[in-house]
Length: 420
Ligand code: ASP
Ligand code: MG
Image (cartoon, rainbow, N blue to C red; front, side, top):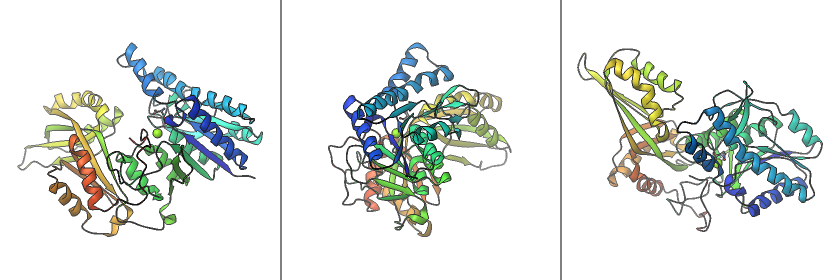
């Protein structure tokens, strides 16, 4: 049986009629090369942002179920239009909603997780020699409601389908040429990486690289799906994401990533008793707020109170404050939010076996007079929270200190919309 390929096109790759036809032509070329093709499309251009703005115009806190009904339309439009274009190229194509494609999720509206992919409808369409177009970013919940998978969720749709249909590769077509050693908008001589391991990519996505949704990388690692992240505007190979065993080189540092969307929440005067940290984090988890770094200092004297800080996505600050309100008033804790924070991280599988990497990071930031407010590490990542306006300087300094620039630099005329 011929091989199956999943091709995912991001919003800028289908933004107007010309680009949509370009995506249709690429899909058809893949079919004509003998592959069975499942294509996943994002909403066109800034359509999802527009829909969110529409909702906010009529309701300050839109009902999440209705939000999903609304947001899921963007991807359907892309797929229906692309199917029309493919049919005109002489091939049979059918478009499916996430629900029709058998993507079953939990009931967590606007941030749903995929529980199962029942791909029989896709399989029979492929057996019928059709090209199958699936609306990204959506599914149907176990309560039979339409759900969406969180911003950037079409990547996860593509990977989940690739796993379900046993695709050879999940190709992510985007408006950047691949995964870079840093955001090329900040570091013009950032290098395109040929190969990145799942573990490195997970750390990169989690620490700000916008090129792939974090959950898609998690899903790919768990199911062994090979991802090829490449430009939809040129034919050059992009970046392949594979298991660590398949990577040949193990550079000390692979990339510098950053995020400017961080906020710090500090709890002042937390009683030093067992169970408080658990209650704070449970309240946040129940409100679906993802916390990242956590710091707690132990009180210096017996009976004194402690301070606890953590970072959350800036958009979740209000939700975090509301969630903490009951505990704060019960225990006389004051909650302070500092919304203008950023984070810079270095990621590299090679740092596992090399001492001195952290020292070099802190020295480099110190030389730039950049104050480090919080630090967290994993075995292959070091992250520092800094003031948001110092993030670009921090990224450039670390990229140059670790000599990550390379010959494979990006052409200036390329747009970078989906990198962020
Ligand atoms: N359209 C959705 C978004 O803008 C999903 C996606 O493009 O992956 O986040
Ligand atoms: Mg994306």
